[in-house]
Image (cartoon, rainbow, N blue to C red):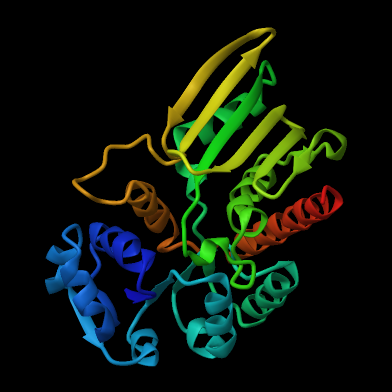
Length: 293
């Protein structure tokens, strides 16, 4: 199992891969970082360290990357033939910095028949399952409210590297909209500098309110029946519903499930189609953002 990236690759994918029974190969330059983090340093004996990215790829059946959208896109374009030899490539969201770059990368992944998936973890939560199940019955409306803590000095705030409210955080919303096959009511939706308000219709009626905040994060899904409201789920994060092990990242249980699902999957055509739909929604959100400036 190959890992590239010195952030979430190490404190996310590393424990997820080992939990699924795999040894890991990654770069020697990450060794000191792994040893310094109490929640992952015990994995050190299950990791092979090498000096170059090419060696990581050549000695892996599976590969996970957790880089900035720009870094991920550039690596894929420069290593298409090597990636095509792998059984599966786990990519991160957003796939690239914008729709144009995403479509270029998707075309190359398709052309080289690279088996890949993108880590949209929301679909593994119980609250997402609630939305999918209710979409079949259409007996209530829903509201998602999401307060996102501002991360200082992070690429996630940099438009140049694929960050920002619309580019980075809204990719989660675009995935939700695409999976549930909803459409945006443009007249009742708004995107500002630090907040998003969407009215969505389709199989289920859904309102979404997102804002960046200096305070603690909070996520909630509320069911609305006639004039009454019932909270379905709430936490400090959309992925806060499963127990954490010590200091581990709350995303890891969902990442373990995601990795297990895709290890031997050959559903790249479905993943490709989903990505095209997601980036179509991202373009709608971008246009809405420009309209409201």
